[in-house]
Length: 231
Image (cartoon, rainbow, N blue to C red; front, side, top):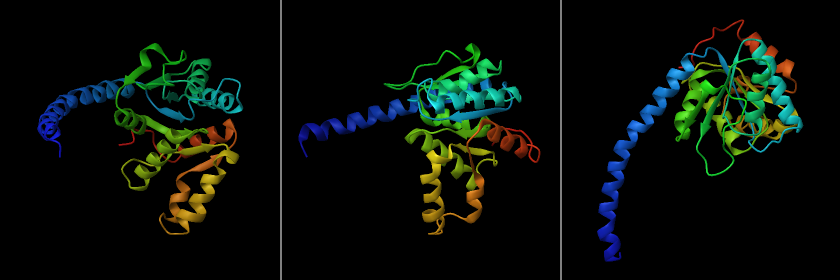
């Protein structure tokens, strides 16, 4: 190993460890601020989907209508706070006069707060895992619109936490049968067939097409379960 590298490595490692220790306080501050803000809002539903979906696209307009209907039923709407489906979700809440929450994340592209978030409910995060914890704790249902890797990550995060009893079961709704068909077929025909999941795991989510189906599924769930933070 090069002597310069050998000399520099211990110093850099020590500096990194010191930085990591102080980083804990910033992480704690994000958790505290987020917990305090969301605990005051009441029952909310998170709507996930692509940041790249443009206004006028069928998926965008569908998300607006879903958020509007859920807001009219008294739920706050939480999104990732940015453009695309996130903006559509906040827009639907805004149009219905409901609570519109944005959990923004600092990214080098795609992400800036949309204009439909309530001013006092626009939260900012540096850490994905803090932001995701708040989604999971304070959302009484999850609506998954078509999206990319981030949307899939959020879907499987919820599924894993519910499957392992690390959070209460909540409604998980995939919107768009055509879009989700390939994933659902793979879950059924590969994961389940190979016995890497149980038959009951398939019942943790449903697939629908319309705002009314989303609303009815969530409302029916809460005729049998109480509304409360998930863990």
